[in-house]
Length: 185
Image (cartoon, one colour):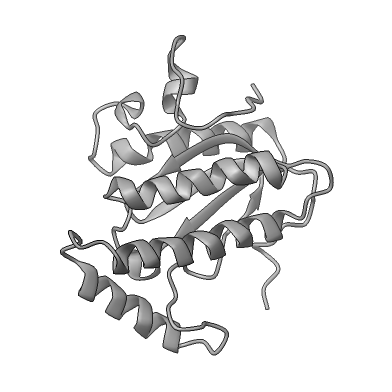
């Protein structure tokens, strides 16, 4: 097993990416976005997660984060992904207005059958791709990359126009985004 993408330094600052299986655009609906954002908030308050920057795209998220009080970074991210997978799949099943329900559940179930460790469905790809940001240059490069992601994807003209990111916190004086941040710069 590769050790390239692992949390090696519990006190480090990391760039983390998590992607929905088959790149399914789940986070186009508020109900599913809110579950993930609430999970981030819970982990900030209860599991020693510190968010420095973030973006939520239709099928993945990027975080720049660190962990305090000797929290286990891998466990915190695992908790976020496990909890949100169950809650979002349940929300899809119980959403009478979800036009893509059968299609999404079929893909989640097919992905779930590929690994014995899955109960029935697999929502997230297993890898988190944590990258230790060991220099200021790495941090700033990933910060720009993260905030410009919606612009590069063609969703907005400017990063601050994307509601589901911390760009407004960084690029405006009066901006207050959806999640609490601990800024490093």
